[in-house]
Amino acid sequence: MATPAGRIKVKDSWIRKTLWIVILFAVVIYAQCVCRGFDFQPFYSVYTDATNMYVFYHGADPSYFVKDLITIGHEKKIAWMMPSASLLVVYSFLLKFLMLPTAIKVVSFFLCVSSVVFIYWLARALFSFSYAFFFSGLFLMYFLSMDSFFGGMGRGFGVLCTVSFLFFIFKERLLLATASILLSLMFYRTISVSLVMTLLLVFISMKYRENFWKIVVVCCVAAIAGEVFLLHSVRSLPFFTWLQNFQTYKFYLRESLGCGGSDPLSVLKNFVFNLNEHSDLYRYLSYAFMSAAVIIMLMIKDWSNIPKAAWLMLLGATISFILIFPLHPTTASRQFVFTMPLFLVMLVGCNVYRVLGHRKVLPEVLLGILVFGFMVAHPLFNDTNSWRAYERIYAYFGAVPKDAMIAGHARSRLLRTIPFFTKRQIFYSEKMRDALLMYYSPQFIRERRLINLNAFYADSLEAVKDFIIKNKIDYLIVESKYYDEGYRNELALQMNADESQSLLYIKDRLRLRKCALLKFAEANYVLRQEVEGNVIYLLKAESIVSN
Image 1 (cartoon, rainbow, N blue to C red):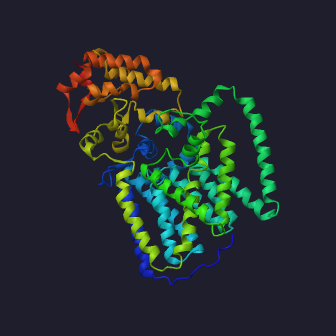
Image 2: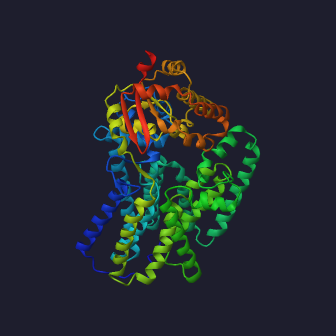
Image 3: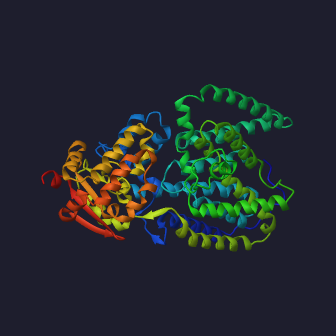
């Protein structure tokens, strides 16, 4: 991969370099700790998807979560779930010294900084010192608008694997590129298909440079023909139907018409550019990058300044996407989830360099503007929530026995964070559903959900007692907002279609105001707290059983 001509060498200033390193480090910390609404919370801030990571507490101390469904399922299948096993090793060590909210920020910070270092090395091979920092900042701001560097999950490792892989194939260090693929298999294996495909394309381009496109086309035609035969053979199997639909709904959450999948525009938006994921800021920045890319394509005829490695990665991701999409759309989208944003950064950054590369100060001025703009926009559009309002409740549950079982409304935002902040297990939360589907049948999950809801909307305490005794519940969280008129009007939107009978039952109970648990909680709570008009009551289960 030859370095583009015209690179302008600028004398490096260690003072300027140190200053920008400190600023970019500060931006990463700021992004980790600032919640929506300019609320700075170093501890009580968490990206919502990360709340299910409480299972790693069990790896550090097996006395926690002994009756938790996700932990039990995770422990049984950990041997073949390599990404989970790898994360378990990381967090089992960190959780001996840190609480999970802090540990995930440490991991996220490390992954983010490591990724930026690889991008900076790549940029220094292409650009001047000043512009290399601007290019790194461009990458950082765009990728911090995604969910990849929040929650310390496998996605952050996925970004690190992707950018390190790009750097290594750019430098023609193919053995190290293979190491990046192995790392992706350990932590975020869904992207490994496109990385392997790209590495194959690199080998072909090096060995058969003149016949590169002929070989690629022949191989793709053969692969597609084999896939058509496979689809014809398995399309009637129930498992294949489930595989095609697994988690596909997530890509249409912002669309009113629900899952389509066959609409080319929806596929392009939701599976190629992944605009239905991440934060609102990611969508706005993606539109800005795509608009800039279109302008560049219309105005610039010479594309030689974009590294060949970036084109090969995009081609590898595209071939992988085409082959995987008919089998499993969710996995297909992962082939572009990091590669497409990274290519947009390369496309825009390399071509802006034509204009700004010879200016010593202007790139740094623009980087300053970029940093300021991000620090203003991030708190307005991010998906990180502050949970400090529930600090008293977390403190209370943090002092109860380790094996205590806590039940609350299935839709409760508070309940789903109890395991994360207090190390205590809960009976069921809607946020657990996707994780539970990896270990249990949909019927089992549906039944558990209905058992939970029926207890919280029972018209007599006898039904609640039965729920407590059968499921060994120790504490209950009762929230007034799930019994008011506003919630009754929202039920049709909140519940799934297969819950119609339970939905009618709950609406009837609310209409008749026959919810025994709320009436009991108002007079027998051990802790009461009001948050934004929602009155929360904590109950000891034994007070109901002995009543």
